[in-house]
Image 1: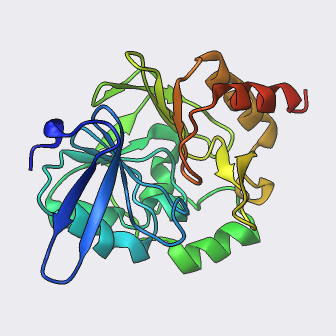
Image 2 (image 1 turned 90 degrees about the vertical axis):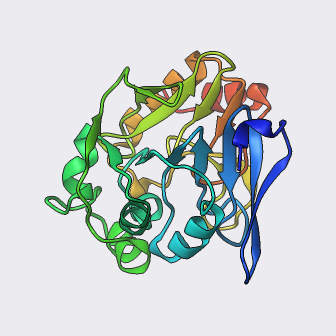
Amino acid sequence: MNLSDHTPRQKASVTDSTQITDMQMIAHHVWQLSNCFPANLFNVYLIEDVLIDAATRWDASSLLKQLANIPLSQVALTHCHPDHQGAVKQICTTRGIPLACPEADIASMEGHAPMVPRTAAIKIMQLGFAGPAYSVQRSLHDGDEIAGFRVIHMPGHTPGHVMYFRESDRVAIVGDVLRNNHPLTGKIGLYEPPAVFTLDPEENRCSIRKLAQLHPALVCFGHGPVLHDMEQLDRFVDRLPS
């Protein structure tokens, strides 16, 4: 399958004998995978041949089926939380590809340190969704490049949290710096990540402001649908506590 043959808003389909799954192209060489119900619960993206995040351990089979005929060079995380690293080990070992992870989250990813914050909510998420620890082959730092996207350190949610930003068309893949649905009701709208899952909410607000200052044209979240309305982002940032 040649991913470059598709045009925006088209879908790239992967078929096997049991089911048809699809990926939706949301920008040039950027696809959102379909891996859960309801849609946009745990988002996973493909940029060029790099998988961004890996949802939960329960999503491994679905993700591997969608990616079966697509070349992959690596998995790159926005951060190490159970709903982002869950399928990492199965994908990396099945496809024989390395894992890239933000430097300050590597100890958690490799099992040498607990995931943070050390709240009951994180511990419950780990029991339900986390995948096994896995060795990181590439440490990500601010200013690094992944498939044409710049790695930007956006701490607060976790110490190492990063986003991926492409200057040419201002596409931003922001992980959990911000979300576009309510964590309990699923209502579409911009929200800060829940405090029980966020190490430093005040520092994360600084990261949200940093995102807005980049003037993105398209924002892709770890949770919730893609955002095209940047005025909505600006209004949200204006209302953040100072």
